[in-house]
Amino acid sequence: MAAPKKHIDGGPAVTTNSTLTNGNVPQDETFLPCIFIEPLIARDASSKPKTISADGLHFIAIHQYRPGSPTYLDSFLNPFWTFLTNLLPLWIAPNMVTTFGGLHCGLAYGVLWYYAPDFDVSPPDWVVALCAYCTMAYYTLDCMDGKQSRRTGTSSPLGQLFDHGFDCICTLAHLATVSSYVVCGGTYWYILLQTTLQFAFFMAQWEEYFTHVLPHCAGKVIGVTEVNYSLGLLALANSLIDREAFYSRTLSAIAGDSLAGNLPICVRNLELRHFLMTGWGIMSVVLMILSIQRVIFHPRVAKPSFTTVQRLKQQV
Image (cartoon, rainbow, N blue to C red; front, side, top):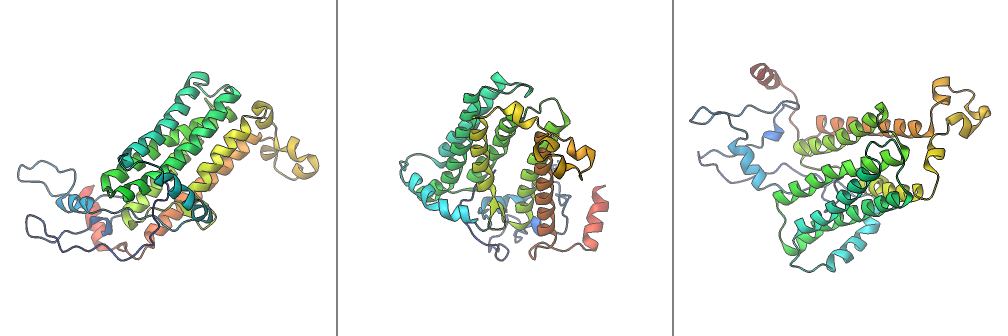
């Protein structure tokens, strides 16, 4: 998940005095009133379809990363991340910091692949503890690479793509860690975990495309910092317990008949692992709905109009 690098509130739309080779002023196509379908791209002189327009290339070149506001934990840990970044030599490229963090996720995923390839058995305790370390180390380095880029004056759109590309891949390591200690391999519950996690990540990038601000928190209390460090601490706690016995208990066995008696049978008989995964799925869906809401009602996003209908008809 993308880490907070520099907190800037959403401001006015990007303006530019540049002109394209054809003399036209570039238009930021992300502000067009087409939300789910890309604007049409004119063919070039050879009549070959183009992947991206000249306007799009222009705004990619001048793109600047703009995250949302920080959580309380972000503000608390920011001096610590800055301190660690200042320990790095200036000759270390920010992308190397990103790569080193991603390698932690690769290590965790590789070890889990060896000991629990199908997530149908719980891996050794030391493997889960290793995953806990790798998760927290990865995220700490993820919070340092952006600071290193500004420290060395090497911030670029390619750096953001590289960073968030690693974040996307590392969601697989987080998914593997949780799936290994709740032992949900080969079930629809695993599909629920993977689908909600990766769709929630996608929706955050989708929101940034239109609003030019990448959200990483919902309010001041919960965000990607809290989620990533919580995943690490949760994995560490799970390395110390009998995971199969803990997560296979039903809600009625945990709460007792007096408390769980009023619940539907299907809920009472839910194992703890399934109850927790259901909660994760609901939270992810809520985050996706909030992304859609922020895009639709964002003041910088053009409202649907007759132009939208025309574009849709042309692309069908």
